Image: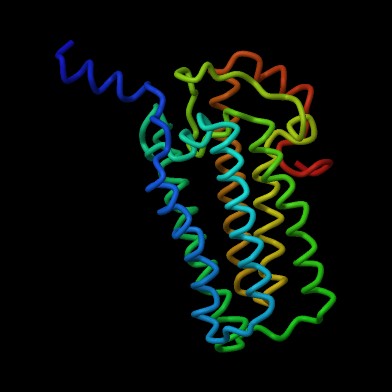
Length: 244
């Protein structure tokens, strides 16, 4: 093997370096940009529901990053791993790209629909309250997924460089993909909170893409990660208890 080929192979399997403060600042700006865009496109800086979403989104993201920086920097670095590296499955790159596009459309459509142009009929306060309430278990599932599973990569790959193991405790004894369940609650709750029927339509597309990713990810884990097949037998449900 050539020197260049050996270097490329080592780069593909070596763990990412510690996340720099500059990257953390960039991540903070990136996170804050999404709720700011909702308010901007809505055209109303006094839009209470959008502020609730923004405070929730930024607060949850900041809490996760700070906790990982202090308690699990290896996982934080893994979450910052460059797409396509570390043996990420090729099909996952396409799924992630589609999810990013749908998420961007979701963020853009909801304020245009619910506030600026009013395409969707106004929702009752109680239904908006249900949407806000769904963000509470969503945040808990996100946080617990991070704290319970140090192998919670953003990429579908076997983390041989990090001695990848099956995690079956905590929320992973409840469903096999608790972070995805938290995401589903977010994608359902936010359109209800903001009052966007079109946003809820994009939510259905996102849930479909999450389901596709779960099926592919589980196939990989069952084939390549020791003990995962047995874990699937112990914890029956992938995403939603008693449903799937």
